[in-house]
Image (cartoon, rainbow, N blue to C red; front, side, top):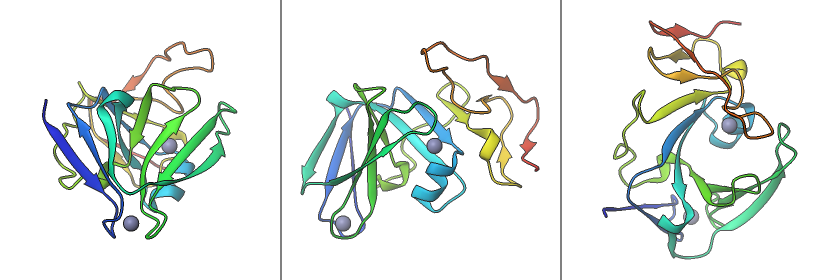
Length: 161
Ligand SMILES: [Zn+2]
Ligand SMILES: [Zn+2]
Protein backbone atom coordinates (compact mmCIF):
# COMPACT_ATOMS: atom_id res chain seq x y z
CA UNK A 1 0.00 0.00 0.00
CA UNK A 2 1.25 3.46 -0.83
CA UNK A 3 1.61 5.90 2.06
CA UNK A 4 0.71 9.54 1.62
CA UNK A 5 2.10 12.02 4.13
CA UNK A 6 0.46 15.17 5.34
CA UNK A 7 0.84 17.83 7.95
CA UNK A 8 0.24 21.30 9.28
CA UNK A 9 1.79 24.57 8.12
CA UNK A 10 4.40 24.74 10.92
CA UNK A 11 5.39 21.06 10.64
CA UNK A 12 4.86 20.15 14.32
CA UNK A 13 2.03 17.72 13.51
CA UNK A 14 2.43 15.14 10.76
CA UNK A 15 0.18 12.27 9.79
CA UNK A 16 0.05 9.58 7.13
CA UNK A 17 -2.63 7.74 5.18
CA UNK A 18 -2.19 4.26 3.71
CA UNK A 19 -4.04 3.26 0.55
CA UNK A 20 -6.79 5.23 -1.16
CA UNK A 21 -9.81 7.09 0.21
CA UNK A 22 -13.05 5.13 0.48
CA UNK A 23 -14.56 8.06 -1.38
CA UNK A 24 -14.14 11.83 -1.58
CA UNK A 25 -16.77 14.17 -0.22
CA UNK A 26 -16.81 17.69 -1.60
CA UNK A 27 -18.81 19.55 1.01
CA UNK A 28 -20.35 22.97 0.45
CA UNK A 29 -21.90 23.31 3.94
CA UNK A 30 -21.34 26.44 6.02
CA UNK A 31 -19.38 24.51 8.67
CA UNK A 32 -16.83 23.51 5.99
CA UNK A 33 -16.79 27.04 4.57
CA UNK A 34 -16.00 28.42 8.03
CA UNK A 35 -13.45 25.71 8.76
CA UNK A 36 -11.53 26.04 5.48
CA UNK A 37 -12.10 29.73 4.77
CA UNK A 38 -12.98 28.66 1.24
CA UNK A 39 -16.17 27.89 -0.68
CA UNK A 40 -16.04 24.12 0.05
CA UNK A 41 -13.99 21.34 1.63
CA UNK A 42 -12.38 18.56 -0.38
CA UNK A 43 -12.63 15.71 2.11
CA UNK A 44 -11.15 12.28 1.36
CA UNK A 45 -12.82 9.75 3.67
CA UNK A 46 -10.25 7.43 5.24
CA UNK A 47 -10.72 4.21 7.23
CA UNK A 48 -9.29 4.99 10.68
CA UNK A 49 -7.05 1.92 10.57
CA UNK A 50 -5.25 3.55 7.60
CA UNK A 51 -4.64 6.93 9.27
CA UNK A 52 -1.84 7.49 11.78
CA UNK A 53 -0.39 10.58 13.43
CA UNK A 54 3.39 10.29 12.94
CA UNK A 55 4.61 13.44 14.71
CA UNK A 56 3.21 15.67 17.45
CA UNK A 57 -0.27 15.50 18.92
CA UNK A 58 -3.20 17.33 17.37
CA UNK A 59 -5.56 19.22 19.66
CA UNK A 60 -9.27 18.59 19.20
CA UNK A 61 -12.25 20.90 19.19
CA UNK A 62 -15.70 19.30 19.39
CA UNK A 63 -18.82 20.70 17.78
CA UNK A 64 -22.33 19.30 17.60
CA UNK A 65 -23.56 18.89 14.03
CA UNK A 66 -26.70 20.94 13.41
CA UNK A 67 -28.03 18.26 11.07
CA UNK A 68 -27.49 15.08 13.09
CA UNK A 69 -27.07 16.38 16.64
CA UNK A 70 -23.94 14.17 16.85
CA UNK A 71 -20.45 15.27 17.79
CA UNK A 72 -17.81 16.13 15.21
CA UNK A 73 -14.19 16.44 16.39
CA UNK A 74 -11.82 18.80 14.57
CA UNK A 75 -8.17 17.73 14.94
CA UNK A 76 -5.77 20.63 14.49
CA UNK A 77 -2.21 21.71 15.22
CA UNK A 78 -2.03 23.37 18.68
CA UNK A 79 0.77 25.65 17.47
CA UNK A 80 -0.19 26.93 14.02
CA UNK A 81 -3.90 26.09 14.06
CA UNK A 82 -3.98 24.19 10.76
CA UNK A 83 -6.97 21.84 10.67
CA UNK A 84 -5.89 18.31 9.69
CA UNK A 85 -8.83 15.92 9.87
CA UNK A 86 -12.25 15.29 11.38
CA UNK A 87 -13.60 12.32 13.33
CA UNK A 88 -17.29 11.67 13.85
CA UNK A 89 -19.55 10.28 16.56
CA UNK A 90 -21.93 9.28 13.76
CA UNK A 91 -19.27 7.45 11.67
CA UNK A 92 -16.80 6.14 14.29
CA UNK A 93 -14.71 4.05 11.84
CA UNK A 94 -13.85 6.91 9.48
CA UNK A 95 -11.99 10.19 9.36
CA UNK A 96 -12.57 13.06 6.97
CA UNK A 97 -9.28 14.61 5.98
CA UNK A 98 -8.74 18.26 5.05
CA UNK A 99 -7.51 17.35 1.55
CA UNK A 100 -5.24 20.37 1.23
CA UNK A 101 -3.02 19.16 4.11
CA UNK A 102 -1.42 16.36 2.06
CA UNK A 103 2.13 17.10 0.91
CA UNK A 104 0.74 16.34 -2.55
CA UNK A 105 -2.88 17.51 -2.37
CA UNK A 106 -3.42 16.13 -5.88
CA UNK A 107 -2.63 12.45 -5.28
CA UNK A 108 -6.19 11.14 -4.87
CA UNK A 109 -8.65 10.99 -7.73
CA UNK A 110 -11.72 13.23 -7.93
CA UNK A 111 -14.08 11.76 -10.52
CA UNK A 112 -17.77 10.83 -10.71
CA UNK A 113 -16.75 7.30 -9.67
CA UNK A 114 -14.90 8.40 -6.52
CA UNK A 115 -16.45 11.68 -5.39
CA UNK A 116 -19.74 13.41 -4.69
CA UNK A 117 -20.81 16.97 -3.94
CA UNK A 118 -22.97 17.51 -0.85
CA UNK A 119 -24.78 20.48 0.73
CA UNK A 120 -25.45 22.28 -2.56
CA UNK A 121 -28.17 24.11 -0.57
CA UNK A 122 -25.44 26.28 0.99
CA UNK A 123 -22.93 26.35 -1.90
CA UNK A 124 -21.58 29.79 -2.69
CA UNK A 125 -23.15 31.69 -5.59
CA UNK A 126 -21.05 31.17 -8.72
CA UNK A 127 -19.63 27.81 -7.63
CA UNK A 128 -19.53 25.49 -10.65
CA UNK A 129 -20.58 21.89 -10.00
CA UNK A 130 -19.05 19.68 -12.70
CA UNK A 131 -21.26 17.47 -14.84
CA UNK A 132 -21.68 13.81 -14.03
CA UNK A 133 -21.17 13.86 -10.27
CA UNK A 134 -23.73 12.70 -7.72
CA UNK A 135 -24.93 15.84 -5.92
CA UNK A 136 -27.14 16.32 -2.88
CA UNK A 137 -28.89 19.39 -1.47
CA UNK A 138 -27.75 18.30 2.00
CA UNK A 139 -26.22 15.05 3.26
CA UNK A 140 -26.12 11.88 1.11
CA UNK A 141 -27.83 9.90 3.89
CA UNK A 142 -30.85 10.65 6.04
CA UNK A 143 -30.58 10.54 9.83
CA UNK A 144 -31.47 6.82 9.85
CA UNK A 145 -28.56 6.11 7.50
CA UNK A 146 -30.68 5.49 4.39
CA UNK A 147 -29.13 6.75 1.14
CA UNK A 148 -30.82 9.73 -0.52
CA UNK A 149 -31.26 9.73 -4.33
CA UNK A 150 -28.66 12.00 -5.95
CA UNK A 151 -29.15 14.66 -8.64
CA UNK A 152 -26.67 14.38 -11.54
CA UNK A 153 -26.26 17.34 -13.92
CA UNK A 154 -25.61 16.67 -17.64
CA UNK A 155 -23.62 19.89 -18.01
CA UNK A 156 -21.76 22.09 -15.53
CA UNK A 157 -24.20 23.55 -13.02
CA UNK A 158 -23.63 27.09 -11.73
CA UNK A 159 -24.96 27.79 -8.23
CA UNK A 160 -27.27 30.82 -8.16
CA UNK A 161 -29.22 32.25 -5.29
ZN1 LIG B 1 1.44 23.37 13.07
ZN1 LIG C 1 -19.43 20.26 5.29
